[in-house]
Image (cartoon, rainbow, N blue to C red; front, side, top):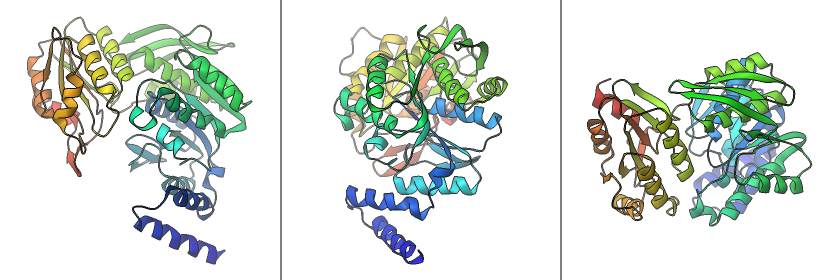
Length: 425
């Protein structure tokens, strides 16, 4: 056994030194990797969440609930992973297989019992989760994104479906009944698996429903109903989409038999950085949000519109080396749903930021009120200076990200801190 570990260790070191190593070799090595870390996945109750939008919020909601129930929880997702309560910077939403098993082994050492993780379409197609099985999985929604990688929406959906092949025989598959693709997803899942399928949503045919929704700036109050009971829920995030995210977390928590009071407390206490995050609620209201897909931006602006009778100003950007088809859509949605749109640069990576902005602007109606300001700080400053008392400023695209990627550089830049420095708040 010692000889086997030594050989695997040498292979791992070789793999890390080879930038052009083949995918098949790496996957084969990562498959061996589970032996190196002594099958940590077998000692964790694992939940996988996939979909275009909402993965991070569902992960945070569910993790908070499970902690309320007294469990030690690990999280894998956008920006930050958590080994219990210890944060670890995330390079990928869904880590590569070697990193994944290392993180899982660290969780086992820290007595983590439950893992809640985001399963990205890239991670699923690249088989990063090849040795994992799941007690529960969630499909949040599907909308335009990542077509630079998947090519078509059909291929994008097919990537998401990989997750449901990994559900254990006694496991749960939760599907958002409000999503346009829900019937197709349910049909496909039934062909793949005979696992338990439940639905959630505002749709009255869903197994887990929401009603009497009241949204305000400080959050949302609603009634959640299952065939057996109805109960009140409060969350700190506004918007119907976050009600849907909360329902998904409730469905998984009920599957794990978490008591109702702990579900309610967990949801009430959840804070999600970079998701409708208030920077200031003074004379000018300012929110930052990660919305970087057309549907996410649309939902964000529709929610903000419910919360103000004054002007809605949107600072919006698209990142480089990502789906180019969505750029004009993002521009159109921003100008169509806000009173003033300022298009600016996000993380251009290796692309020309001017070209990205030109593509965002390409399908604009000249009658729409918008500006193009490449420098992101200047764009934010202009939005804040333009805003009058009572106006609502949305800064979209980056959320809680702490840097901008420009070429090979990572330049420190936090939208929240920029706003605070400009407003001196």
